[in-house]
Amino acid sequence: MTAMLRELLKQLFKRPFTNKFPSKRIPESVNGFLEKAEKGKAKINPAIPVPEGFRGRIEYYREKCIGCQLCTKVCPADAIVFLPKEKKVEYHLFRCSFCGQCVEICPVKALEFTKEFLLADYKKD
Ligand code: SF4
Ligand code: SF4
Image (cartoon, rainbow, N blue to C red; front, side, top):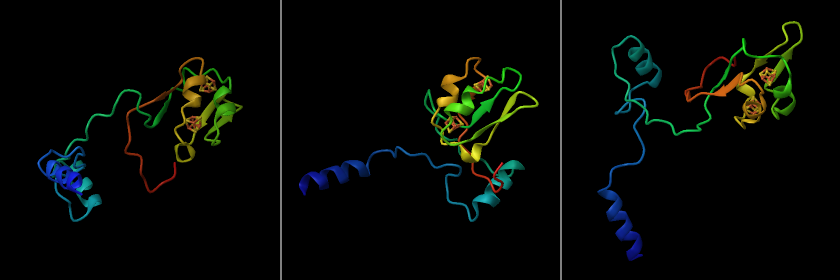
């Protein structure tokens, strides 16, 4: 019990490890706050930098893609669909589990993880 109390007191005087994002104070409406920020009427409290190797939104470099289909074969979530006419692929973010197998197997680095983590949206695509 005393150890717990000691730890509690210690933590009271430490800086928090988390970052208040996107706003330092809770806004009345997060959507409203983000709309204001877009118009330059509110300031976003920046997120802490994401670490190396972070698995954010996947970027697909269409011009690099050679249509080998390896990514479609390893994807466990059916998030990558082959387009036979174009010999390219289509990536569906809403199905992706960010396992990274497609990024690893692509022979021409046409798929790459970005550091983008704000992925919530009203639209699936
Ligand atoms: S990261 Fe995994 S789930 Fe997402 S598209 Fe690539 S293989 Fe599929
Ligand atoms: S593995 Fe790479 S080159 Fe092959 S189809 Fe997928 S994205 Fe294109």
